[in-house]
Amino acid sequence: MKRITLSDQLSFSNIIQGFWRLGSWNYTPQKVAENIRECLDMGITTFDTAEIYDDTACESLLGEAFATDPSLRGRIELVSKTGIYKQEIDGSPFVYYNTRYDRIMESCKAALKRLHTDHLDLYLIHREDACIDFEQTARALTDLKKDGLILEAGVSNFDPMKFDCLQQAMGGTLVTNQIEWNPVCFEHVNSGMIDYLTLHRIHPMIWSPLAGGRLFTSSEEVCTKAMAKIRAIAERHQTQPDVIVYAWLMHHPVGAMPICGSRNPERAKLAVQAAEIELEHYEWYEIYSASGQQVIR
Ligand SMILES: NC(=O)c1ccc[n+]([C@@H]2O[C@H](COP(=O)([O-])OP(=O)(O)OC[C@H]3O[C@@H](n4cnc5c(N)ncnc54)[C@H](OP(=O)(O)O)[C@@H]3O)[C@@H](O)[C@H]2O)c1
Image (cartoon, rainbow, N blue to C red; front, side, top):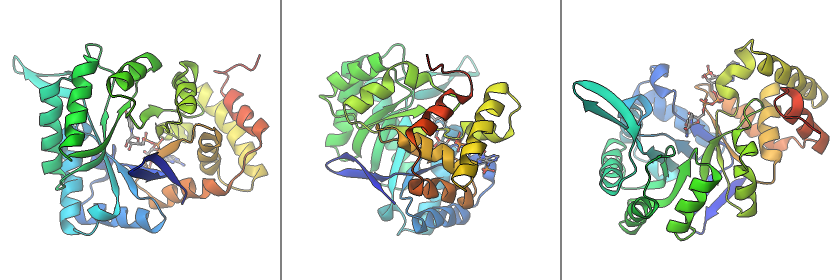
């Protein structure tokens, strides 16, 4: 498996396993550990979670999995996220964004406890905070790095302006933006975010690379149109449609790292196989324009 360099001290497997949906898999800690070992066997060493996934339960379950097999933590790169905050207000839960200094520090320390680890390899600000103080957020992330609680810092779902502002406050040390990108989602292509990252040689982590499965299951026109083209290209390459979608994401010079969200390691294997597929440049554009959302003028 190809490695992607994020910084002098951190590299990721090109394909990442994500655990957003872990709560719905009804896995025991032993079964989670087994899933991680199966990923490791195919070269996937990087794993993604977040504080907000199942209200912290996802981090807790991963921590329990590490406790069942203490050798695991040292063999992987662990990513988590902060910034989406659920607070009880007047007896009801209220979810909002909080990237202030004290919240980030408290959130990270609690995550480390849940995950049974002394550090995260990468810590991300999960979503854009409309009320962000860039200097304050940067100070928190920098202090966490200085204290050895995180190796590197990044963001998720940031637009180019917010990314650039925080990047400046961080002295250029943000190592990624985790963004949604797939054949029916072009938000970050159209915002210029992908161009910004390409220019600065910053590799994005890609969430919902298969549109959360909608590509295969949805009757929405954008999905059926995209899938008809993806299936035709898969036939040309004598492979499966999933493989083509991952190959399409990795064809772009930005050097994307797709995060596979399936519970099924056989489906992660399809992502791994994509490294062997060389798409023609015209095929990239066939998929780019297939859903009808992007027009080639
Ligand atoms: N930063 C953020 O804001 C953010 C947001 C969302 C997600 N993420 C991260 O990105 C990861 C991946 O996101 P995702 O789970 O949406 O990714 P995804 O890989 O696009 O979607 C996974 C879903 O698609 C289904 N699926 C896969 N192949 C299929 C097929 N051939 N036919 C039918 N269904 C299929 C899977 O079902 P099975 O499990 O049954 O295979 C699973 O439910 C998450 O785990 C999380 O770590 C980050």
